[in-house]
Image (tube, rainbow, N blue to C red):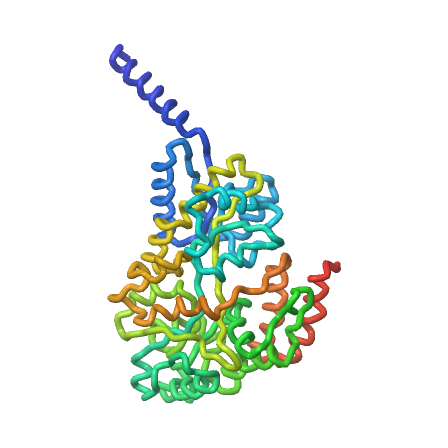
Length: 413
């Protein structure tokens, strides 16, 4: 190796060392998402590093998010900043940084910029743990072509359960003459608690008492709502069975006229070429209600650099992050000004009535979470499968559920 080569090698080594030394602080950022979100998160991390030259952001992605997060926290190596749903705040609160002191010193922070309902989801026992990055309510998607063919008026805010059922009957058809329907009026998820709440709340019911200390899933209002969902499948035949659901994506293939879903369906449905679709509020019964899910960036209590982690979290959930979320279309921006802008309410792309998502902030509700939420949801979900498979009535299953959930809430073995 000649002297020039030696010089170049030493220069490169020193340059590399200098570059590493500039990054005085490393923050790990743990998140989930598809390939598009992975690419966006990389760009966001790079933008933050450009503005904060002494900080290096280490991205950690996972699909089995909850499992890996619990292992990391249990093993004493939690990520510095990570996604957390509002329903998980009570369970993780003891492991998180209360960011209220940072907010008090932040001259740029204005809670009025955000949807109020979302901020409440990240408060627990007088402390505040995260700024929501996005959210979604459940709404009613519908296939306009199938409605036109059946001569049924499009759904709107006036629809109640009976109007929904009447339309679903007319939209359910046997297309091949084998005596079995292969086009259905409506599909709704029953595989977890989140999509059940619009029906329960709209009927005046609830799963937990107001103080969240007792299970009241056996109340007449809740039982009636759950049985109505089961009856739409097994009594009226307007929604597909589990076997029929597994066969294909029924909405994109034009085999289901209505679908209850969150904002995450929009990017995929914008690829549909065969028919036009739009959205409307979830039909009401005694009152209007829908579920809201929200995610925030939170900070681990074991983070060595909480001030810098706060800057990262605010950067990602602030204006720049929200505009990217708006353009992605997977969620609703948490900053009101951006949510009402054309970045989100895209006039040239469906849905035509995107404001339905925003209106839901006025009547939508976050789930009534408790520290045992995930375990409770698993118990309820497993037992309610008996209803969705037509093995037992909603009343029978809900009566059996009450002592099981109450035992969990009481901390009994």
